[in-house]
Image 1 (tube, rainbow, N blue to C red):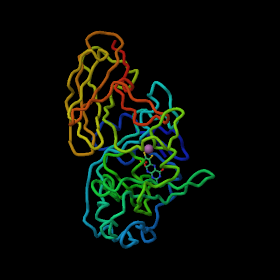
Image 2: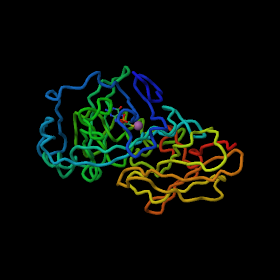
Image 3: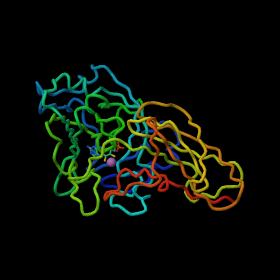
Image 4: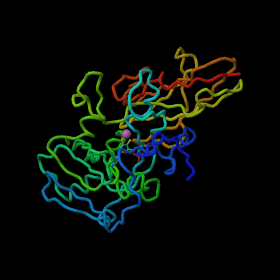
Length: 347
Ligand SMILES: Nc1nc2c(c(=O)[nH]1)N[C@H]1C(S)=C(S)[C@@H](COP(=O)(O)O)O[C@H]1N2
Ligand SMILES: [Mo]
């Protein structure tokens, strides 16, 4: 197989999207990043064998088949998916985990059904507060821990999609065939692939993937007391030029993307003088809820020398991307402007 991705580990497969493929609004399925705790199923499950169970604090526990989903009203939504650990390797103070640069993110148009429509069939009991999702892939490692994650009921019934299509194609095997969760605007960890079971709960699900990881905690702190990763932070990335590029003097096009999870990106600025002055970038292409915005800025690089290009996003609530990220033990949510600076040389 031709490997187009930057593979960080083959088993489980963790691979990031090269910058070249982050320059379009839609990230093609074949280059969409891969993040896995367990084994990607060897082959696609036979759809006649696949079932989804809904149990817990519901009026009527039920099991649905794939046909049932196809007969429900179809929902289409754009959504930028980002791994909580994306940009970890760019942190000044190192943190453990996959050494993502900026390619643990991608944007796709997903098709499926709203989770709330499916939950309505089972009936949400009045004491239901959280919704847990379980993937059916084989776990790796001796402990054989299943990938189970829960989200609050409010998120589940407002803006959570169960997707069976990705960019107009059946959901690819490695992205969760036949069905995955997409808590729109939330980090990848909340978007369980190979979905087989939904359980409504009074409390958040307890288990390894809820309590030991995907929490923001400091050195010496008990992970379980850290905040659970939820929505994607306001962030901008530079996708062109590449770091350490050598640019001829004159006009140079800077490209990037910016995203804000559940919020809206309204401005991106670029600085080439270490943050002393900022120029507004121009947005290119679609502008959809939960999806990134592509941007460009033409830089007049008239003087030879070494430069660091910075980009800074602002959201619709007036919030600005921080100059420096807040460090945490597992290096989640790195959205620092400085950490994402791109050093280049103008000759
Ligand atoms: N079943 C299952 N779902 C999962 C995971 C997993 O290991 N198993 N990894 C999660 C994480 S951490 C991320 S970032 C996204 C990655 O989705 P992708 O591989 O489709 O890009 O899937 C999430 N859903
Ligand atoms: Mo992730």
